[in-house]
Image (cartoon, rainbow, N blue to C red):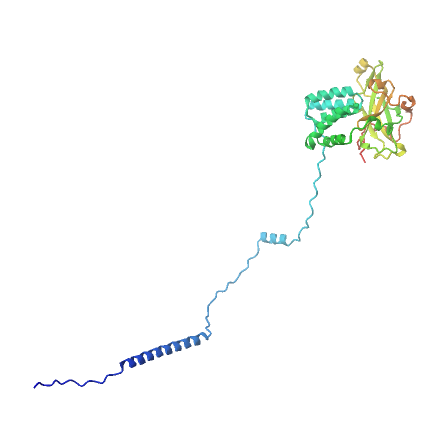
Length: 370
């Protein structure tokens, strides 16, 4: 008989799965509690005020005394501001006629101008044409040629020269640019336009016989004006040419004008009584004994007086009358001999200073325009 095996007693089976679930749940609960306690502590700590003490260094400024330069700059800054004044307007440079560069042409133009004033247009043309060969493009030479042709009545030729001056502009012709433009714009005045508006009165002659040495003559030349005429006094010119007669009978024109002083009796012009007077003092030039022996002693003979307005000869008086032929001019009042005969007087003109007859006046001879 088979023997029976004996087995140990079987233990009752435990609920393992539920127990594991409960263990996990308790572990999770414990972790949640720990996290909650930690979070609560952090919140509690955040509500507390933490005071952190730090030591901050303090900077102490020590002032030093200012230097002399700083004191000076501070004094300058403390001054009241200087009021700003407007800069003065620059003085405009006056426009003048250009200078003739060629010396020979300049001399010829001066000689031509003198001939034109004296009425010798032929000589003026000769001088200017010669000057034109020296300076063919000079504005002054061209303008003087225009004046001569205008005075001769050759207006088309005068206009051509004025146009050449005008074409140069103000940079090339200076003050002549505007003068030429006015001529081209306004046309040319005829010499007869001013006849009767300006004329010469009777010249008064005083021979100073009390003077020792050289003979002295004082002329007073009246310039008469029509009261209705609008005259530019700056354009009035009186030209006087003196003549001497030698003891040998020769009549000689005075060339050296330094022996003549002249001045207007009153400036500015007011035409009181309808005239203004030009006074001239002429002293006969002294000569050495040898010259006097060869050519004879000179004595005052007479003069030719020309009244010119804007370059036009309006009136001429010659005394003695034969001097007009020597100057190439004819008196404008030939029909009335009494009108051109001078008034010889024994009394010096008013205000004449015999001790200083050759002293030129402070004001220029030509009266200023108004």
